[in-house]
Image (cartoon, rainbow, N blue to C red; front, side, top):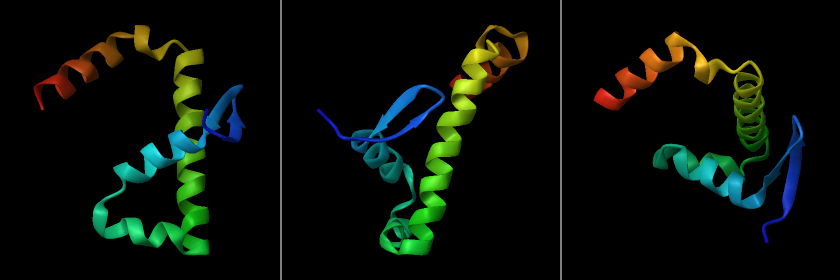
Length: 77
């Protein structure tokens, strides 16, 4: 089981979640993640991303016509 590194909006974020996030960072920028100042920025982005995702779930944004339209556009890309 992966170690819990933070809890955001009631959801536990694990080391596995962090590693998946880091893999999405462009390869040429990944080396910066180990620099303390840069890592703090990336951790903040990681936590913010999950917070906004939970807010969207709580607001049931996935049930809106705007969300359905956005998903249709993304499927075409």
